[in-house]
Amino acid sequence: MESVLRSAGTQVVTGPAATPGTRRRQRNARGQGARLTEDIVSGALALIERTGSDEAVTLRAVAREVGIAAPSIYAHFPDRDAIVMAVVMRIFDELGEAIQKGTESAGQDPAARLVAGAEAYVAFGLGHPARYGVLFSERRMAAQDYCKPVPIGPDGRPVLEFGAESFALLVEGIEACVKAGASASTDVIADATAMWIALHGTVSLRTALPLFPWPDIGKFVSELVLSLARIKV
Image 1 (cartoon, one colour):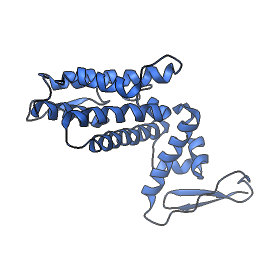
Image 2 (image 1 turned 90 degrees about the vertical axis):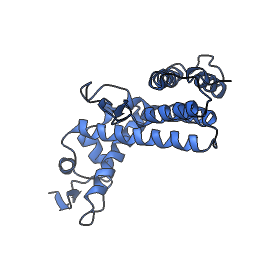
Image 3 (image 1 turned 90 degrees about the horizontal axis):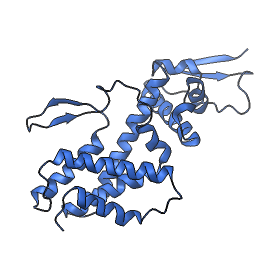
């Protein structure tokens, strides 16, 4: 008979039922339930990376990946969709961090920072196609809840939530160019939206059609950004 150890929300299968190929997880110390939550998300992300799709994410598959019993997941996530949404949130964070690093690497010139941030966006999408694809695949939330504009802020603009961090960075980048007198934009939100659409299309089409004779990515993105952000050249 197999035995199941329970500690801090973790179940570890031991005994004859654990096959030689099953990776056994060390029990978390008391109070480390948050660590298992992150491990579950990491396990789901690993499945997505290997298969290229979130269809591989099931409770059983994630449990095998992490090395726990499937019922242990319920203490952290109510169902499979909740795990996938946690993965989406983590990837949005990664994308935002990539944009920020790209922006910071460009020095102080606002136009150069905007271009570098856009290049980082495209580089992230092309370098991590499975991750990026999950962000904009099948919708798992109602349209009004997914990256929705919420109450209008004191500046008259929508306050963006969940997954909108990367878009907000584009907005801030164009605003900085306007303040510096480098951009002729009169509608920052609209121009940032156009830029986001263009960057997303660049990633999606290059991923889908890798053999198409695409132009040089660096020059292409730079010219795209300068045009859509109405940068004065």
